Image 1 (tube, helix red, strand yellow):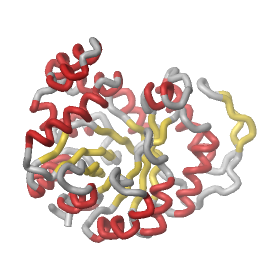
Image 2 (cartoon, rainbow, N blue to C red):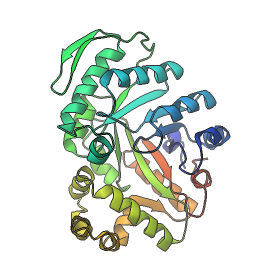
Image 3 (cartoon, helix red, strand yellow):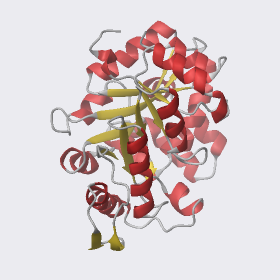
Length: 321
């Protein structure tokens, strides 16, 4: 992989098949193998901040990012405090990624109404800009009200704030109001379409599922389960339609809406799995990841699929070297 591509190369943490306490040596190995970034997620596993706090201590040169912290599931002041603490622990190395999340995470799992998610995310971004700069915030935002909040510990280096963005509206917001964008569930060719909606030079991180396994049937079976779980979420479905993948996914969506889960899985074409999940030999996986970078993804973030391997083994097989 070229030096240009290797400027930023991320890894999703924590590994799904290991406890957090077992990650210290493995994250150091990953950094030595060429991973410059560690990015966390937040849904129903670990929270977004704890794995990064550990990584900040264990790998003191690594860049760190959340992809993403949902805009609803913490109060705005708590988001600001968590971000400030991590920015203090890893000065200049932390990116706060925020986004709308999904009805399942926000409403079904956290009991919070998923109302006007774009507005909530915009309001949180505006609040964070002020709070992380050390301002005392008293403001009536459209989706919440803040009265008299000021951080007691203002980070010396304010962390950049990236927005999760899938389609033109959020990409425009990420490119104009935030410091970068975060996307996922796109092919290497789709990266051009997404990057074209951002101002030149805007950082664009993308989580990319990668499985260095040459048994295509096994990988596609696992990939179909992931695709069905994610791409029936309305925001992701609309993203795939915008990318032109709607006709291929329409049979899956219809079966899912009818309650036919088995039929929905069977309706996902091989082409969709092959577009959205990088698989094959390690060298082929690295080549496809290089295409993402060449097409506008400035921070490819590998999410290893441990099929026939541990997650760490999979990550190491596709490391930039």
